[in-house]
Amino acid sequence: MTAAHLPPVLTARPYRYPADFHAVRDLLVETFPITGLGFNWEIRRWDGSHFHDADPVSCAAWRSQIQVWETAEGRIVGAAHTEGEAGYAHLQIHPDYRPELESAMIAWAEAELAAVEADGTRQLTFFVQDYDAPRQRLLRERGYTRQESGGVHRRLYPGERPLPAPTLAEGYILRTVGADDPQDGDRMAALLNAAFNRDFHRGADFLAFARNAPCFRRDLHLVAQTPDGVFAAHVGATYDEANRRGLFEPVCTHPAHRRQGLAQALMFEGLRRLKALGAVQVTVETGDAPAANALYESIGFTEAYTGHYWRRTL
Image (cartoon, rainbow, N blue to C red; front, side, top):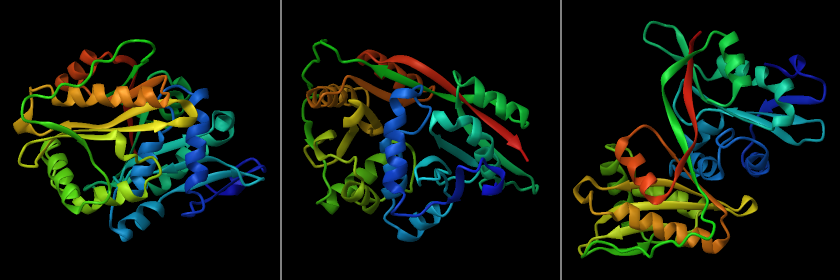
């Protein structure tokens, strides 16, 4: 979608890194209080997409697939992009500009971000909150259908509630993880791969995120460590100071160390630290995994919003 198809006051152009990084990030912070939970990304996800990869070639390739929309004054009010996986599009948009921008952003994503299937067809998927009737209507009009798969946003308000001090099972110690120890990076990668049944996490990637992401704080990245130095569980927390919002991502436990309350203890400690920083609400995203949802409910998180994937074959 070219600028000629937009109102005169708005212009579409490719994303420029690093100049646009903080402009889009500021858009996410600014719009959080005036949109529904999960409407736009949170800062940890934006930072992670930029820095959770030590390979500069991969990072440059991802950034080349971002389009931004700006006002005549140069203020970015929209961005469309992938999250590294072909065929999935994400929109960040200021709600004041939805009528002018949203259709144009979807059209650009269809032209630039769709995945080519084995039979030669092209497919594109958006994740849409169930409360977002306007986007659902736009997608339905363009031929998208809602899928069964989706996700849940959970939220907790710390308020004046007492938060229990963490108690780890015997033999484990609670510690933080920073950006200064390559061995810790490798331990983090081993834990993430085992916990999520993956094989692509590398120690260098975690260290790149820890060293470069503005949202990273060592005091909010907690692990339960065994006596022989293995990372058994990890809870990463982020604090959005402007919105007094905390969030958890990721939350995981090594399969060999589950059912010992490690993640729960780390989350309680994370909540204590976030509350001490001034957080008035804390969020966590989850799918439909029973164990994960049971964990969050045991801590006090309640379901705020659900969303679903919407897909179209182009």
